[in-house]
Length: 253
Ligand SMILES: C[S@@+](CC[C@H](N)C(=O)[O-])C[C@H]1O[C@@H](n2cnc3c(N)ncnc32)[C@H](O)[C@@H]1O
Image 1 (tube, rainbow, N blue to C red):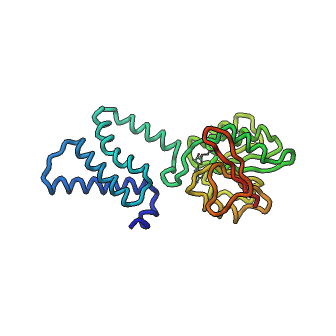
Image 2: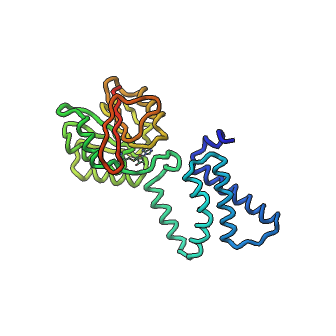
Image 3: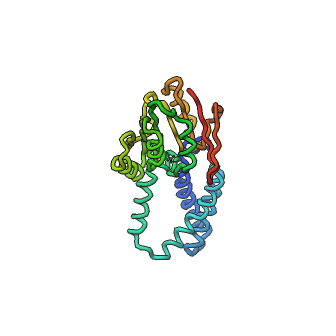
């Protein structure tokens, strides 16, 4: 049961378990013949959802979300907030996070100290090409484009608003050696680049490693911020003294 569930993205699984908990709660209450106030109903749903989530193997921090979801829904509905507010909040989240529910790679940004540590890994004077896989709002690219004017920098970003932001930034910010495009990193041809940089999450690292091994040219450099590749120790690690204690992992292909 757990292995079949394991194929679904956690957020989709969590939603299905909420629905299952709701059905179970309705059946239980009918069977016993109880009359419950909405908040108690929601607490029952939450308890069942958390129990089912534990059984389905969701990570621990999901259990709290699963427990609190239905009660929070009842409490927020009582506030009588106009529905347009929720639609607007949903649309903002959608354009910022897009397919994060599936990719499990949300938007968060490399620190300035990571940008500076990256500078030292790049060729000092000769031309080179670099791609940032999941380039966010373009901070890595625009910084390095300034410090390394002889390099060419490219970004690929799937989420619409970060992409638009980075496109405007590179297009109108005077960055002639920097470009971004809207799309999936899985469609990028990594053989075009001397340096491939990624700051993603633990989830795609194994697949990304396989893609890098297949496509990157011998001698090119693969750099991951914070997330290592299981069973493939890097040739070099660079600890960065920033708020998150980031580490750069480097592999020469
Ligand atoms: C952790 S952020 C890193 C942003 C930037 N590279 C940096 O270091 O500041 C990861 C970014 O990857 C994007 N992303 C996730 N999956 C993607 C995919 N399959 N294709 C392109 N971008 C993706 C997310 O939308 C997010 O903006």
